[in-house]
Length: 105
Image 1 (spheres, rainbow, N blue to C red):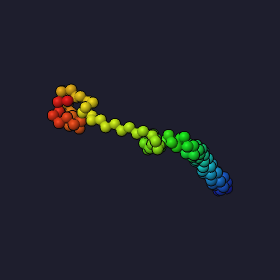
Image 2 (cartoon, one colour; image 1 turned 60 degrees about the horizontal axis):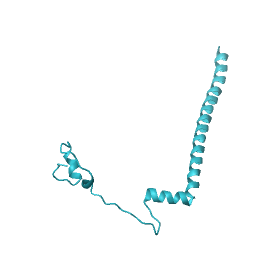
Image 3 (cartoon, rainbow, N blue to C red; image 1 turned 90 degrees about the vertical axis):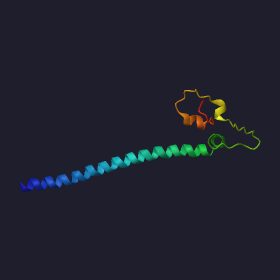
Image 4 (cartoon, helix red, strand yellow; image 1 turned 120 degrees about the vertical axis):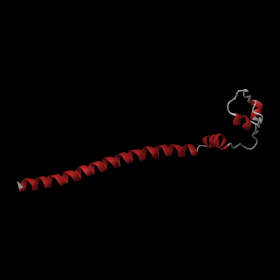
């Protein structure tokens, strides 16, 4: 009986170590796959950042930058001139925000 327990202990400890190592390897493989996908995505972004056409498009769209010689149009519109609220409008604060102090619309 003692030898059976000893044999079981000798076989059980390496088996636990093996399963722990397998889990660790699986976790590392998942991490590596995720990092490789992220690296390829970042490589695409770096390539796009080197393309002057893409850089200009982003600068114009996201940063509102213009080139020298471009005509810049700025529209200043008073919302009260464009929006007419009905007289039964339930939120008087909106009329105040639009510049219509009496709340009639």
